[in-house]
Length: 344
Image 1 (tube, rainbow, N blue to C red):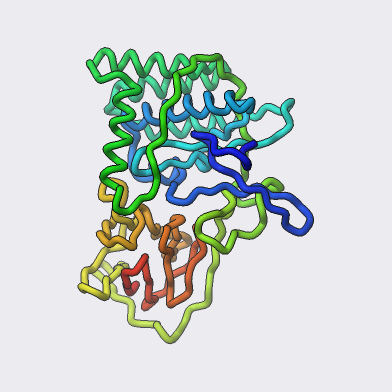
Image 2: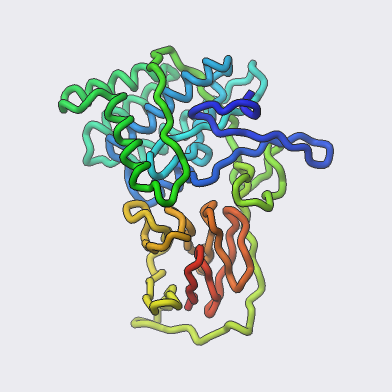
């Protein structure tokens, strides 16, 4: 069903046969996971509202196609968002109907409780109610929607559906020059009892029988569970002297070769892209995706990760696969989209 139909709110799957086994790939191009999108920032009431509206629409559409909404994965690693509209899309696991996996619902509840802006009383109220009900096994999607609407009514906001449509259209107009995505229509709200959410809890460092072992070669499609690290040997050709700053600390920099602008990589992790409010280093170039690459530290070393970018990343003329991670060395030549840098 999910491979043959465009179901709003659900990621489109594609069935592939590899070495006699069938695997499902999900298209996550131009999307970022919920956990990555809010890695370094908190969620206000607007963010929480958009998440639950998207969730409600996904439930409604799943039911319309006779799919059990209890098998929509609620793991923040596998909820993917359009970063322009903040619309979230879910993965449907075609599992045995008799199996229930409530762990993912608890993962989402704990994630939201950690990431919510604790200065935003309305957001905290909604998230805490969700957390409490998820733990008690009494979660109602309709209750969350009613609570959100009561907040909007109290602060004299526009009608939820109209306001949300206007927000989507406005964001898509802003991103029109770099995005080909179209606004999604909203469906009539359905309040229903929704408990026993699930999806299968995935271990981050282990391969699952549900996903392919190897990442795909193209940029547009990839398995959800395809995060892997490719370390490479240090290339002596590009080795340069490391600059030592005050107090003997290593100073890490990313220098643009076109204009000589220097970006500090001291406080990692950092995200590079062109969407100002969502990234740490803004590169205003048409070839750069809204969230393009990430620099992070592991075991005292700096790594770079492609964030499923449209035009890709290169390190020393080696093109990275979607979401591939690579260890950096001083003097490495880095290309983000069509913009060239050197790492020191």
